[in-house]
Image 1: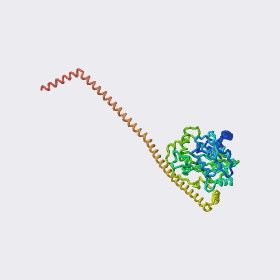
Image 2: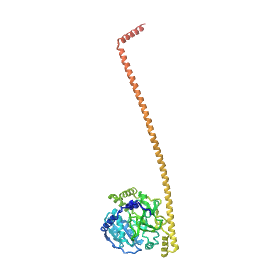
Image 3: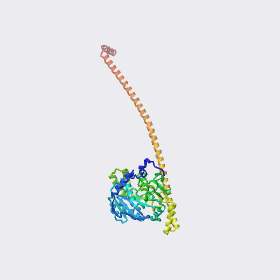
Image 4: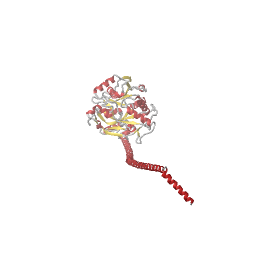
Length: 487
């Protein structure tokens, strides 16, 4: 695998997990040991067996939970039907009745710690794996994640784990897939007795970015199937604009080599990664999600999550209860619908396992093969249809961007022309104003000159009329008129 710059060793987990912005990872072995020591002394046992005795082909599910009551019934029922041996919950300060709901189940162990999750998240999960998973298979998931794998209706969980053991695999990649209802963003109150699988039935693969598994860096993992990819974005990016890492390694066998939660909750180190992928169906209960976001926004914790809580809250308030399902969304009938996509990768050897299990269950070779092929080609056709639809939408987006670019260029040209013409027009008006001002000033000067001339003439006239000579001439003129009139 490609090596990572040594300068980045201390923060590789942040780099790899970026997009979901997971908690800080201890950047030194000493700090990691200190956190584990503190956590070990801050764990309280509340319910169920403290230790679980199970075999190499049995599974224990591990969960760090908080205020997860709306998920408990669907969660426990799913993993029971999948065939899990036992479920262990580490509660992190629930106040909504989560612990009380869990104590009703006999096949559940409940522990509790009140340590700050954003600081101890990785240590909490590592603690559960190391306590319950030494030399065994464990599945580490969140309270709203339901794990499944291709053809789980044919291959039992025991058969799957035997297959992993026979091939010396120690980890399975699972891709995180958001599930949603017709109302993507909703504040509607949900019924916790209602199955999340029935309410949140839709998914969308149109906004998924892929990259080679090798690009994550040198974690010491050996990948059995080169078709397995690292997936990013999805509905988190579609709805909120955040980059999300969708690839996890939740199913692991803790031997002397593997490093669980290596550098982030998404990754493992020194693992032999299986030749197929599972799926983590993410059922974010709408009403519960909104309540959590409201609380997070109100509490204002000084951590890296706060910017995301604010963005979620803003988006939920902008579109409460509005149906905004993408055109590329599809209803999920079975995880087999995803076979043939990057979310459910299978190998030839894995498909041989499916055929063997099908024959063992009496389905018949032909029936099994037909069932497998039908699911495979159906999923491939669905993926092709989604890809085609996504291509059409992408073309529409490019056309709109081109139109927007043309309009922007036209607007910019118009603004530049206006900017170029405006100073010239202003200059012309200024010149006209200056000319008129000059003419007005000239007229004022002429008027002043004429006024002065008139006043001078007036003074001259007054002076003349007041002189003796003027009176003599005036008397002669009057005498002359009288003589002419007497004639």
